[in-house]
Length: 364
Ligand SMILES: Nc1ncnc2c1ncn2[C@@H]1O[C@H](COP(=O)(O)OP(=O)(O)O)[C@@H](O)[C@H]1O
Ligand SMILES: [Mg+2]
Figure 1 (tube, rainbow, N blue to C red):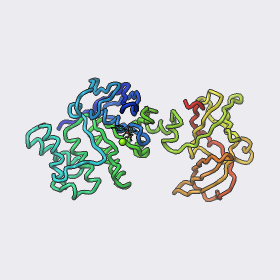
Figure 2: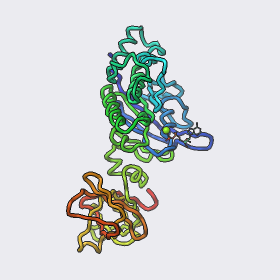
Figure 3: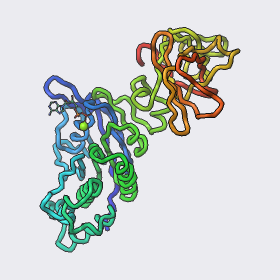
Figure 4: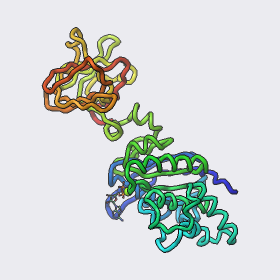
């Protein structure tokens, strides 16, 4: 059997305009062979447009797309060796599962009948649907239908697999199974894969790297861990996970850095290196980066009033209000001895070793 070998995908200054509206703006990306990358971002940020450009379904108005070093401008999806799966899997309702999977192979005249039959059987067993070959789409669950759509796309051995919100129509439990299934297939076939999603958990859990888009621009292209731990903008910090944004002045006392929030109080920052520039900053603090200050530490802490206490399994999430009415969130392991009630005043500091992100107030 031919094993698909992942291709390298390169985008240089790729942009797209619908009339005067720039919906994709100078995107540069280098995607490695066999890599799983998600395009993540809010609705309308240009994810699907970018995916359609990669597929060859839409001609970009600026920049270049190359596959393994070859400029693919003007090439059809099939000539690019690209396979696409959409959210609405669009199976042919009057065809059996095996005929659906055979469709692309027959359309592209990739081999004789035996070749097609063998390829279909192999694909159906890869997606674990051997038993379902003779069924019609209406006789399958949503998840099974999506696996048929995947098998149909993968049967023609694409070099690159493109997925546009492939799990959007599935309910939560099924989604997790399909996420695992898609990742397993992708690794097994070593196929370069780009998936569009607006679901950050899905992006973080499935990807080698995440490309985060905002209003057509690439905000950050990084591993899930880096995106979460070292967001390079306040947008990234708040879009991925939860971040409490605080405006502050950063001041240096000898070798110590202290943030003085505009709402009052102070927060000592444990690691000076990323905070070298004193002045107006925005701090992005994750809920789990807070700790409770002891009585002696209160002079250098942030005062907040408890609004709502939510026990979430092993952790406790507390919604608090700062003096200026800003709402912030704190998360900590749930313990027996600490009881929080509505209206209580808490004094917060940064947890030992926590490294909140610091951005200069101009937004950089
Ligand atoms: N065919 C089109 N003509 C004009 N505007 C479009 C067209 N397709 C998409 N858009 C606009 O381009 C922007 C990006 O759309 P899209 O790529 O579908 O976003 P996403 O997939 O991230 O939700 C949106 O503002 C959308 O309204
Ligand atoms: Mg979309």
